Length: 598
Image 1 (tube, one colour):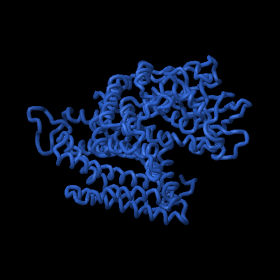
Image 2 (cartoon, rainbow, N blue to C red):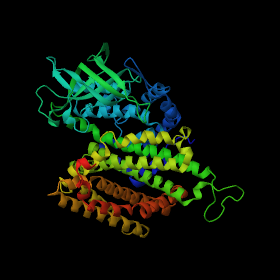
Image 3 (cartoon, rainbow, N blue to C red):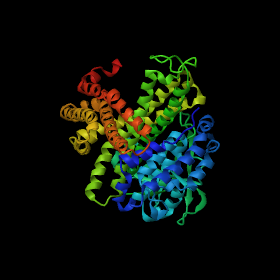
């Protein structure tokens, strides 16, 4: 089978040629030292670690899974050593606050590294990203004392973090949680409750696990506005960040038996008068927690991209080597009994669909990550505000559309291999199982679509979309003098207008027909996702044409980008027309049947 190869060339092209990362980082004081050379060094070093140590334990981790005995979780062979190397390399604190031992790097870099890790070994990647999210919430909302005590060990990878939101009766509707937090005289809280689906809730990779737990104070108002966030360590820690040797009544009740990501411990966690510390303001826990949710949801899209890339590598290598049948135009390898299956148009359809969506998905993820960095580092308040607006619009789409396309790509890769794609040794059946969860957790894709259509579009009368459309229009204007871009821009402009017209139509119809929001939501998410992928391909094509004209870079690679982009525009982008028709059909066909008729 193919060994995972980090797509460093693609990543460097996007950063240097498409997004001009060095130029952007130079405009922001917090990132002014992040040069192209530093970016290359970080990405290439991460690729070595991921290819050499993390990828090789992916399939063995899947076979062995995590073991649960007497409340103790043991990770598969090689995971402890790989995590120790990850921590020793400083990767856990890559984007962390320099003041507390982090490296202060932009999210764009960690996004690329996350994609590599997910492509190589998604179970391992999950242990790393939860800590990153936990440190983000703490660094932005925790007290100075909590940051001093907990951040350095989390950045060092000595301790790890979790998010504890879901309960048996409360998933999407977190206002239904039952976990309680009772204040003590010393300012701490006793936290009691049961949480489910807790990734990395218990394991043997770090000496302590720091849980971020949603719970309600005794006098909290009902519903989501009565939730607070608490930091609850597995083992008690003194004020100097030393372990006291005392447990904190935090126990793992069981781990889930799952379809995929089997080397990632998904735990039922029980808290019983566990000592906790309030993070942020009382009854403001959802807002505090959602500081990290945009980052975590971005990570899920990166999981889709990463496993799609892994599947593409396996499928494309196989298609060039597997001999079956003859090319429609006649034998290509006359000395052989058959031609490689890459000669068949339908195999190319699958491979090109995979590659076109992978490259666009990677670009969209970087585009969203750049907005997170601008919102964090930029000095200009207007720039930060615009970036925040784009993040609000982009993240639901990036999470849902990239994971949908990621799953599609893994299935297509499996199809390219035929029967071999169903066999464990090739790795594709594992990819299909591992990628499936990305469409579900951190907010199922239907919820992302509903959030996009309802809160992010209809409620604000399309104001967020206006910000994005202004960026699209600015790009189109910048390319008017480039003759080779004109056929591409025409397709893009038409797709953009379909999106705008459809948005206005849904906003109008939803005024007196509330069901229209939910009825349109998923197809609208796909329409916006497809249009964003088209936008990304416009930028990629423009950059590739500039490089070709200048004679810089690998010509064959650049030409492959142009050909893949043209495939997207002529074979995939037309689907936007059918999505527009689906949305226009409205809510009536969905709501006509009674519940009893289902």
